[in-house]
Image 1 (cartoon, helix red, strand yellow):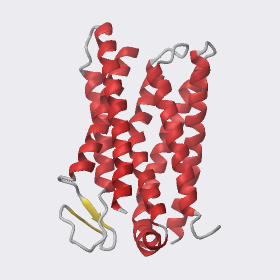
Image 2 (tube, chains in turn cyan, blue):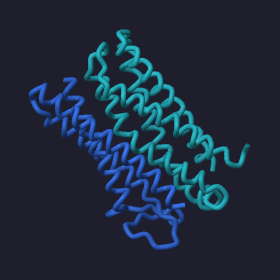
Image 3 (cartoon, each protein chain N blue to C red):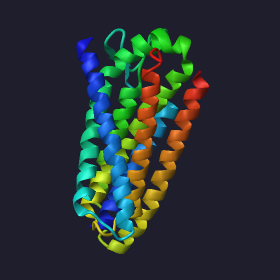
Image 4 (cartoon, rainbow over the protein chains, first blue to last red):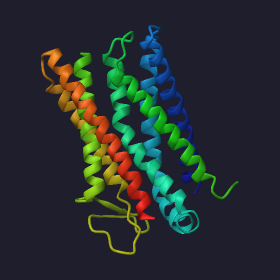
Length: 147
Length: 112
């Protein structure tokens, strides 16, 4: 039980860092496309986001079976089916964000910081929006029996 | 370099979204995890909790990484041609990602 709780806490911390790095990257790239590049941050944020995505993914994978049996099957499916759907949607969306995180890393290393492509900005914006949705969904599902 | 990167990542995104959508819609050849038994199986018994997310998710991420590597390796040498194809790949990739997300949402809601 202790290791599962620890995994959940670390999963949440990594998700928070992923949200911050992806959001800051999207805003930094928007500025860069308007003529105010920041080469250091445009390289740093994608690397941080990729590391955090990997941590969130691995930790989430380790705690998911326990959630599926003890939380979803034993309680959510009977009392709050909408929360089960929301959680599954979040998990699948996280998978679809994976290739975009990889694209963010590759493109940020290959492109001139002063001229980031629309593809890179699109990836950063989509990842930022996706992880914000996932963090809010996770918070809602995780707080089902608290407030 | 930049066109080649866009070509490779566009191909990776398209491949990942396609594998995800095919795996989600057909459910063919998926490995299921049975969390109550701690077992893996291709043929889950009825009435037992079976999770296909691990196989679907890992196949999607592996396809994306592999296609990115392969497209980088075999990208067209001409930068203009590479950029033109990169634009098409990204357009298809975004479309497939959107389709995958929309299909997943409708599929999950319909299951309830």
